[in-house]
Image 1 (cartoon, one colour):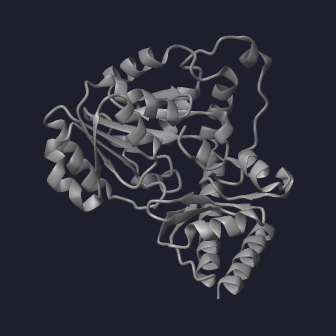
Image 2 (cartoon, rainbow, N blue to C red):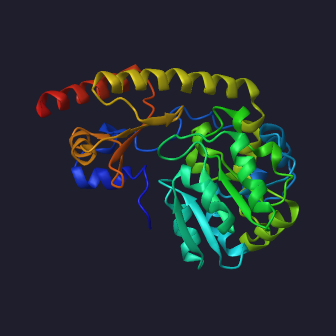
Length: 330
């Protein structure tokens, strides 16, 4: 398996620090989970059925009529490469490592690209895959540029796959409203913005034929009955959406200031995490871990990703640890 954030139990064992003493900032998940609604007994007792209200709530929330609910966007990331014959797949890097891994494993030829290389390379590609905003850098590509890339791919039957796992905080920038265009596939994650990653829910937006093929590949009942109830309630709570967006934006601003004070001005990020490229990434990661603070380490390029602290006490703990690091490394 590839390396991911959120591996708290491994850190507990490695550093011999009790779980309850950890501050886990290693994943870009909102630290304020939505309240879990009451789940009726029937949701546990019966096989789940589609069109029970979840899809309609999702269509309204995502402003997209064409969608498929899946057991987390990870399920779609692994399955989509199996729906095309092997070809040339461009992936904007660095990005969420499961994307290139899945396409390579399915027999496709992988072409790693920087943003500025896409225009020259795109006519040689069958598929272009990117994360927007990017994970881990937070880079955001304008919608007009993405649609221009899609048009060039679609002329030859190609796909543009856009993973929008972190776009809920800025929904106006989404491509979900354009998925009536052949060859445009948009992935959305439920758990990050709603702070409920353990629910394992996501959505794929694309043309009906592709969604049908994906559904057949994944098989029936991929999303559990209780998850469907929970997802429907959360997606429909418009007031809570606005509150979460505002809370994340304010926490992001405080985190940016905190990191800047410590000489770690972010080089990227979004409203759910901040990205700091630094040659000292491994050293700082280890320093924080020994103090019970877990952040996400990237080796190529050397960088750290900081999730949002949930409250003032967590912010203070991170600030004090970073000040201690400054003193020791001075």
